[in-house]
Length: 348
Image (tube, rainbow, N blue to C red; front, side, top):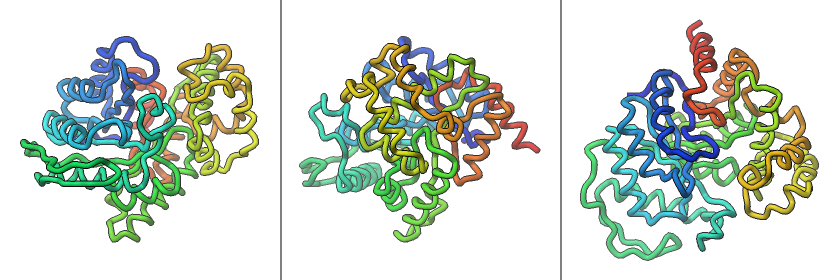
């Protein structure tokens, strides 16, 4: 049921005002042979359940994946039910991507980060529910006396992927999950190290390391005009400003932490608090702060330039140990030149 290319892409990337655009993007991605279509849920008009249902009805081959749902935002039975429903709609094409959270969750009155116990217990509860069991549980996930899904799809349960790049998340992905989703802006060398960590954890836990898929997110922009440098750098600045997450990206890439400190100390970034830079800052202010990002960082951790250059950089990520690349920053309907260049190279 999967497409041939080891490439996926996000639909509705960035700020959007019309969710219907995701349907045309998904169809374009399927026509290009993408293996997966990813949904980055944002409260508003990027609700996972609604979008996944629309994409399920609009496509027949690519997997539909969430990238990602924080553990803390849904009751386990609600999450299990959502995933089971989409798995039925897609005839087995759904992938549930879960994330450990972020500081933005403070406004919801839930913990910023899911603990290791919450991560392990939640995925265990989900799988037991999908297996038709009645679950009683008392612990950090909540207190439940009799959770159960009354109806289940005839398809197998969906694979569950853990997002992250920290040591603990990579270990947990290898031990308990079907895959890991690595963030944007890490280099092929960093992907190689992360993939090795995940597979080592799987082996040490008695699992088949090849059964744990490594999905690497790669910001991709073919032939960007001069102004696109500011857009790409602004997106990187948003990733790097995040507490803990920015340090993890810099550390796994082997980059200079002083450069990260200078970026965060810029007045436009320092005043943001928990707000995302590219969601709050005026583009001129964001571009001014993002000029502090070294050019080498942008070159090493993105796929940009001509379609052929992008395709070559994507192959570097696959050669480093990724099973699939999730293209970010450009929607599927605009990726045709890169996909065609990649397919030509793969056919040689």
